[in-house]
Amino acid sequence: MAIPVSVLILTKNEEQDLPGCLESVSWCDDVHVFDSYSDDRTVEIAQAAGATVTQRVYDNESTHQNWAMEHLDFQYEWVFYLDADERMTAGLVQSVEEAVTSGREFVSYRIQRRDFMNGRWLKHVQATSFYQRLFKHKHMRWERLINAVNIPNGPVGQIPGYLDHYFFSKGLAHWINRHNRYSTMEAQQIVENRRKKAGFSLQKAFSAPDFHERRHHQKEIYYRMPGRPFVKFLYLYLFKGGFLDGKEGFTYTCMNFAYENAIIMKTKELERQQIKGHLVYGPAPTESTEKIYTNR
Image 1: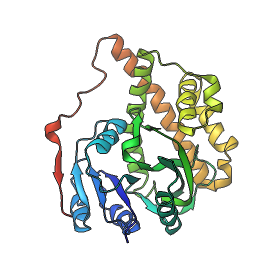
Image 2 (image 1 turned 135 degrees about the horizontal axis):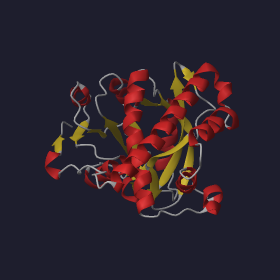
Image 3 (image 1 turned 135 degrees about the vertical axis):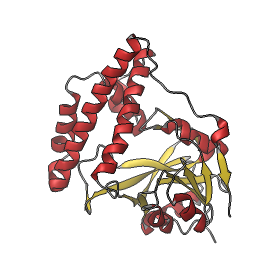
């Protein structure tokens, strides 16, 4: 009997990593590959594996994922979401099955992710290891342009097992190119928050029961800090214990220093453009660009 969970995989030119990801979810009989118009063999690989492929132009993270929740024809009420460079472990699959058949009142579950760089688990240097990846799709939405924040409509639980993440599988150039796009979106989000005069709560930043709510308020405080790249370096490398992750921990911390600096520079650039009356945000994709391929 199949586990009553649908799987959602987001892709963009993932012919290298997608086969391993699909293999790790081979237990599922309702796999959806949500593709951003790949121009490699991603769609071919997904269809050959029996996945349902939906294509949509990527605009930003929260809008893209919210669209999937509203429009994809999931067979089950529970969805497990992962990226192509992530793998479900056997222990996690077992925990997922137990969670969705337990009858508990949760609408979402946090999963522990292990991030690997050059074969080494970065056990200490990450800001957080827990993410909401198993949820009832009618009870989940996201906010923010990038590094979207989960907003579940109901209580959140936590289950054991690991989701393994090989974020460096395509090498340094791919990481830099991807985070160049991410830093642009982060800068756009900061400028938009400032335009809307987004507030924050110091109390909620440290005491909110849900990590993602804490993260929202922490980010608003963090955006106002001077010397943010140095703060992040010290936080990840010393406070979080990144030095215990060896040279990979140091490398990862330096990469995050550069990423944070790029966000600051792009934020200042966007604010100058805004003052001059230049367009800061590009147009959203139209519905006519969306296509659905089904090969159950």
